[in-house]
Length: 406
Ligand code: CUA
Image 1 (tube, protein in one colour):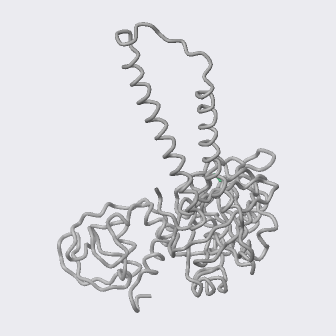
Image 2 (tube, helix red, strand yellow):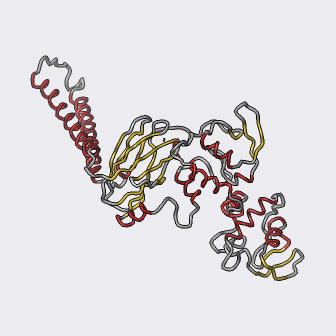
Image 3 (cartoon, helix red, strand yellow):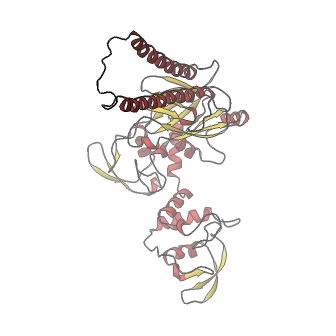
């Protein structure tokens, strides 16, 4: 069985084993008795069948014995159920909100998170609510699984004896991305937890808008690279033209701006990106205007390195160039920008090169022109990239420049 970290749930495992034990015992007993009867009462050994009529003892045994077994099984189930339903007094409360297709946890001090973070050895009461359809909050390591029903607050509790990260799943089929409705339960020691609870949503140095996009689970459906699965990609929103379908059914090509994004979040069904259905749940008061503005600012920020990174991934650059400083088929991107190396021109003449803007641009669209020493002329030609894409790739390389390279 999955290792178990919740002591009140030990009884759940116990009930499971007792029931399993009885089931196996009965299976074996019935099978053995059946085989014995087949052998003992076949036509050779028992040519004349006996007719037993009215046996008080047999009737008592087959009534009383199953009753005791069934009640015993009920009792083990009942005590373990009770242990898990009796929420200890003074337990810390965390509100859990499920929606298509993300989780959001709100603490008593207003701190929100998209992961459930709890202190070790502390009972935690979960107030479960759903925004849309039925979801089911499931932590296998805790043996806790409880439904979130729209229009109704349900609750459950848990407590961890051990530190660590554990999976949280949605255990009720809730639509297209049900399988991606996963997150983490992180168990910290009290001190770490207090520090976490006191700090705001964003990690140190992290953009507030990005932190909010994560917290609200936007990335559960939208990607930040060019992959599109359940929803349009959020990569470089302000830089890519999109065809949208207006409420009256006409199509229009736009470059998403702040107003468009704001409307798409508040009333997602009003104007849809062509090719996508009206599936996104609207975000109302749970998302303040200030929070939405921070998200929009992040999404529309020009030259964000992650755009270039996503492009580099998409275009296959990262298949040959690492970002950790080790050279692969091509030189590592880490510290490449601004570095000085030796190279060879297409006709084999050696020369010194500096990986500046102009050099790197040419290295992408015409790689054979100057190959750095120690590498083969193996890079495919990328002469079909437009200026905006090149700018973003360059911005990304710049962000990976070494000391003094910027
Ligand atoms: Cu939510 Cu499945």
